[in-house]
Length: 238
Image (cartoon, helix red, strand yellow):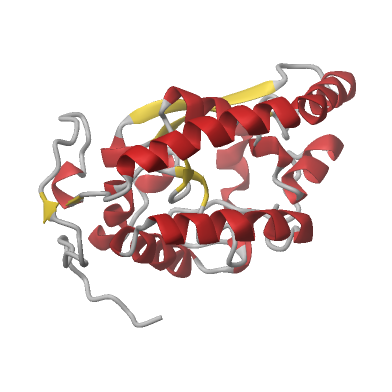
């Protein structure tokens, strides 16, 4: 993929317009986020609602089993709730199955020296905070199934850049990375089907920017079809 020059604006692709967004005033980086018109926005939302609803119905036995295993293995809540940033940097509460000890957030500053990623990512392949159940559901992305509720609420789309925590976004060292917030954030995206944590942080961000600049129904469907094989392979998921 060709490298993208440092810029705070987007070159509009065919069928799309790019202007300054109506971003929330509380967003400290609103001025860096372009507004992208999504040609298939209505259909995208319809696919989100139908797809998330069907997935929740079909996967409900799996989700109930995971919830039971989490409850049996370690004390604490079944779900992990965390503030993430959606489109234009709007904050929302994202749901995941808890895969770590209850005090994982408090322990993170103590293990920052173990971080294996640069930029705004914090990843440790053998994170000492992980539970046994958590390690398994992380490998196959089962911990992210509760995000389907976020899709129904409109916080997320099925496809889009991965929603990030404010702490990680504050560590961005290039303004063009904020481009990723010009579209709805998603449960799966190019990063998830292209190697996930095996990629560098800059490669991750550039995949997100590529998605923004080339967003289409065809690209969304292509990513969705590649997601299941990527999940079963478990490559780069930890």
